[in-house]
Image (cartoon, rainbow over all chains, first blue to last red; front, side, top):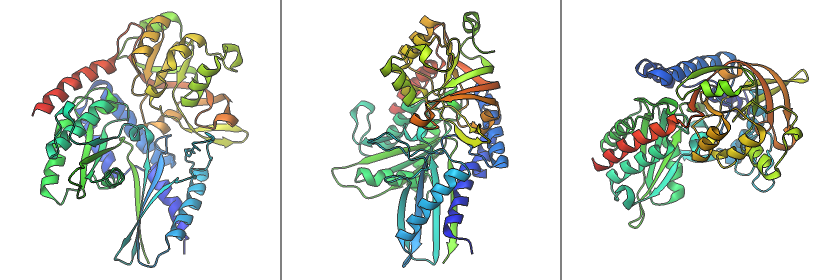
Length: 281
Length: 190
């Protein structure tokens, strides 16, 4: 039987080198609509996706911050999974290879193997099932840097404490981001009571499939409307101008405190790298 | 063809699609901070930067038979080094800056004053662009700064990029920003 560590190395390889097909297909579609330099950029992007998959090389040189979302049944040791993730990270960094991105804040030294304090990021949840589900997102930092957190209300953009206020925040975030984070973007939104809660929630939204429709019809509608509005901004692929600035908007909610209305906007670049594995225990 | 001459730069206009061939130098966050803080004279750098293109890139590199293979080398976001760039352009005689996302007013001004051009590479197209690298000429500050932040000299061939800020003061990014600002204001009212 394969060790968990080996399975995780392959999860890294898949995430880093093979973009989900639904994203590739979507990019293919928009390359037929866009014009001029945006179209040229998309052509190179599509060629790059194919080359990365064929040669098993990282789609983007920024192999990002590895973020693991682990859902494990009762009785599975989190410490064991964490140790395996760390070992797999070291192997994957060397073998694929990934770019070493973990930098010590005090010494400014790069650890060289993508491990360090709180690096990679691992989120655990217990589930009532006999399956171990591990999802990995390689979060590029160009797009991470343009994410924003909002505390409603915000008078300057007329964002009140309601869903229209949320819409205005997201538009503000994308307007400010312009083309700096490699659009077309994937947008995860988290709404809730505290800062830490909404930032995790918005990242979790980025795990959802492109076609996944929100189960809540109010949110499904809001996702659709915000996406439509964003694509009116005209920023376009790579920020070269055009009709497609974002490919998806996904929203998650938590209950909030009467005094708090936090909205976190997490962005992913077009190279939205993620992979998932489900293991029977 | 690199290095770029004054007349080459002046002939380039925002919106032009170009293919670069010759030697480019990489440099990102740490290197910019270091060059400006140390006020390093050009002769202290092992590569000739006069007329060269400085590429904002932190590549993935694999060591192979005592040489290096560039595995992936797309651009990184340029705006982070905006505060250092005017000094770097003028001190080292650069004729091109390449990265992604565009840069600020101070760099636009420096491009104009020093007859230099900003080239936008295709973000995320790292394997495709790595195939355009024919040879690693050398590397500087590898031990100290690490692979991503070191200065790499790369021989490239037909490396695609788009001029988005030219030496005549034209900036495609600000045109798009203005357009999106108008749309944004309209959407706030709906």
